[in-house]
Image 1 (cartoon, rainbow, N blue to C red):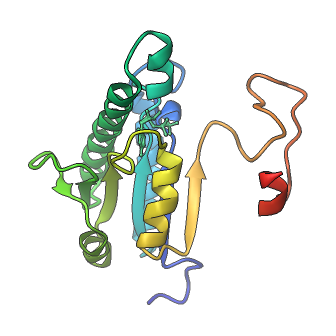
Image 2: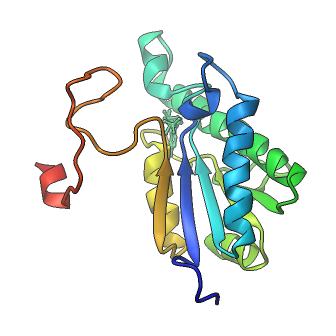
Length: 192
Ligand code: UDP
C-alpha cells in the first residue's frame, strides 16, 4: 500500500462518445492518446486501475430503435461496441508501456478473458490496468450502470467519470445553454 496516493484503487469510466473527438463516429487517435497519457501517469503512481468504457461513439441500442432495430439486438451491438473501444485502449496502453488486460462481461475468448471480479483484482494487484468490456452483459443497461456495478464488486475507493460534460447539470448543457451546474448534489435531490 502506498500512503502517498489518495485512492489505492479506482474505477475509471470513460465515455465512448468522447472517444470520437470532433468526428461524428469512430475512434479519434488524438483522444485515445490523451486518455492513455493520463492513465499512464496514474498507473506510474501505483494506483490500481479498472476501466469501463462506453460505446456511444459506435452504437447505442436506444438510438437504433428509432431506425427500426430490435432493442435487445441494438443493446448487444452497443455492448460489442464497448469491446471494440476496450481493445483500442488496451492496444494504446500497451504501446505506451502499461500492461493491460481486457475482461469481457460476455464470454468471447480469445478476444478477451471472461470477466470475474477475482480475476480483475488479481490483474490490478499485479500492475495491470483491468479494462472491463461488454457493459453489464445485459441489455437495457448502460455502461454507467456497469461502472457502478464493477466499482462495487472490485471494492474501488472511487468511481471517476470522464465525459463530455464536466459535472451534473439541471439539463443537458450541450442542448440547453441555460442549464446550471450543481456544485453538490445529494442522492435525495437527484432522485426527486
Ligand atoms: N449497453 C447495454 N448494457 C450494458 C452496457 C451497455 O445494453 O450493460 C449498450 C446500450 O445499448 C448502450 C451501449 O451499449 O447505449 C453503449 O453504452 P453507453 O451508451 O453507456 O456508452 P457511452 O454513453 O459511455 O458512450
